[in-house]
Length: 70
Image 1 (cartoon, one colour):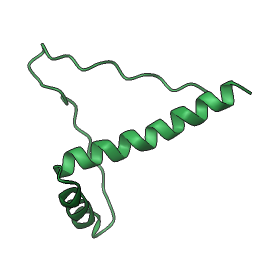
Image 2 (cartoon, rainbow, N blue to C red; image 1 turned 90 degrees about the vertical axis):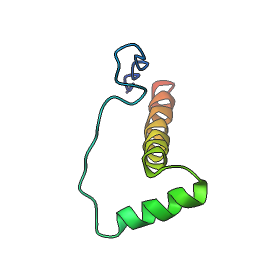
Image 3 (cartoon, rainbow, N blue to C red; image 1 turned 135 degrees about the vertical axis):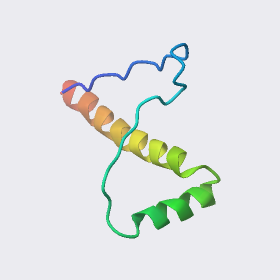
Image 4 (cartoon, rainbow, N blue to C red; image 1 turned 30 degrees about the horizontal axis):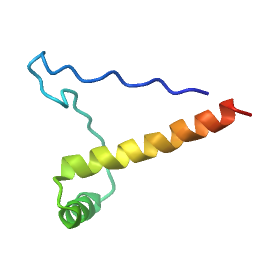
């Protein structure tokens, strides 16, 4: 199973590097945990979340490449 690659962001459309929004309901207290963790890393909450999601997706992409090689 191969996951699709995300297209490179367009810097010429006036919307910047991260033009799309994502919204999700989360368990109580998660916002505070994310805020504290992002402060420890020295990045904004939004960047912390982007990195966490990217790391999780990369795990799936790695697993998909392993399955293809079998």
